[in-house]
Amino acid sequence: MNPSKRTFTLGLAAAALFAAGAAHSQTALDDVLKAKEIKIAIPTDFPPYGFVGTDLKPQGLDIDMANYIAGKLGVKVELLPVTTANRIAYLQTKKADLVISTLGKNPDREKVIDFTAAYSPFFIAVFGPKTIAVKTPADLAGKSISVTRGSVDDAELTKVAPPTTELRRFEDNNSTISAFAAGQTQLVATSAQVAGNLMAKNPQLGTEYKFVLKDSPNYIGVGKGEDKLRLKVNEILADARKSGDIDKMAQKWLGRPAGDLPLN
Image (cartoon, rainbow, N blue to C red; front, side, top):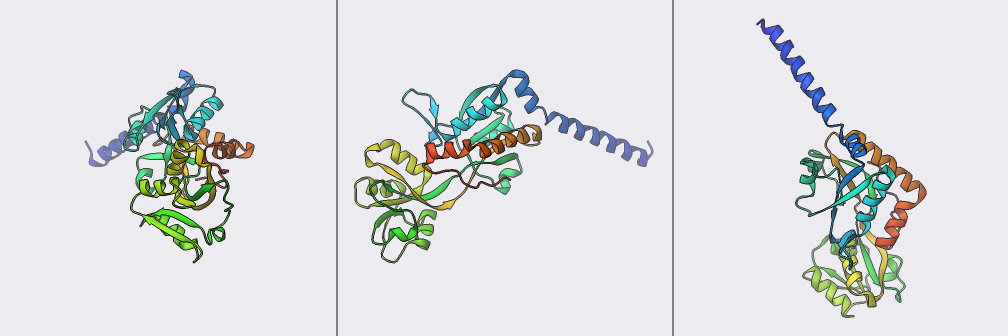
């Protein structure tokens, strides 16, 4: 075969394979609508985003969002419990159509999966009992607060705490939370996930969100190249922003509205 003709033929074959792959990669939304069911990977060990309730059923912000998206698509939902380690693999192996599991976006993950717009905040904040009035860093003056030494929580708190704040640093999260729960400090600086667990286990403390120290939003994971499904979910999220439904979910589970979340 003439070398130039061979090159042209191989080029056509490669283009055909690429087109076939692109067409195949766009089937997720159609498959979901045809089956009238969507499979969504969710956490069950990460309160308040996802955990098992007293009825042994998954509940939390991520579960509410999974049910919400299924409802807007008009399909049933199959919730698939995943861990931090295997959630992305569920997308890559097509075990799940979406991953709604406190998933942060970074360049390495973007190489293997795609992301929708952000759907909820993930944040480090100051928490304390409702009986103590704290709304801003200035309100920390003269108060004691526990924090884990050397953590991001510690770094962010140190930036804003007034000089008269008593920062009590502990070596791990368990010690930090135990000190607050035992009344050794008035307040605690930690992540929403750790605080959610604290509040669930110790309702008698009346702990609530006070103010945010650092925000890092969560995104929904979608299979690489599944643009039709990704764009459809983005439409649902955009409408949920406008209606206030996203803020309601965040208020219910995190004690604060979602606020301004990234669109990409």
